[in-house]
Image (tube, rainbow, N blue to C red):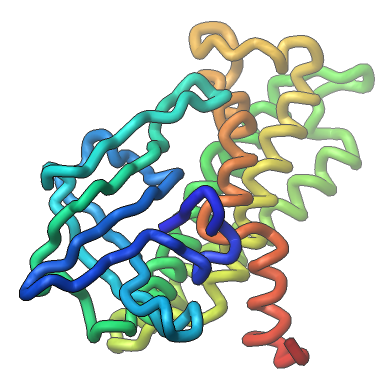
Length: 261
């Protein structure tokens, strides 16, 4: 999906697919492709008609990642992992029967994928959740006793519990829609907008509660196998992937609240 010049403005992709007979010849570059270095198959959004408005000139393809001309380069992340990749396409040939949907209708397919990704990201953000934090708060001592007795800590727990329950029921709502053959809607933007912030706030507060121990990322030493540290160092990416906070708020404002664009 994403390109160096087309992230939040996904419809601005420049990777080109030109039709030659019953094949498409693809040239361009993608970035932040998750697990592209081990994937057998990928999904590709490419511009097939540059003469049309940017949302209208896109098509959606399935791609064999072993196709000649596909080059994958891993990106080193701050967490130490390398799950994201750059992908380069040089005269890559894709059969027309690997196109998903009609020619020029790739934006609709892309939105469906994005809505599902937002649900997944919202759920991933719930990594070390409220129950894990409760266990930490019961065993962590503050000046006045166990952290669980602190009014400030209990207020945080209440907030996170409400958010986690909301995320759970948005997920149920999405599953219900899918089971009825309905495309998931803008409610998935809510799931990610709330879940990604939740997934950053909770581990951050947990690390603060550990005091100097919060900087220790060793699973053999840190509480909860360093799950809070891992969650926190990964969390900034979750607020970007699948749509930034600002993009999601625009979607919620326009499609859920009905505010003018």
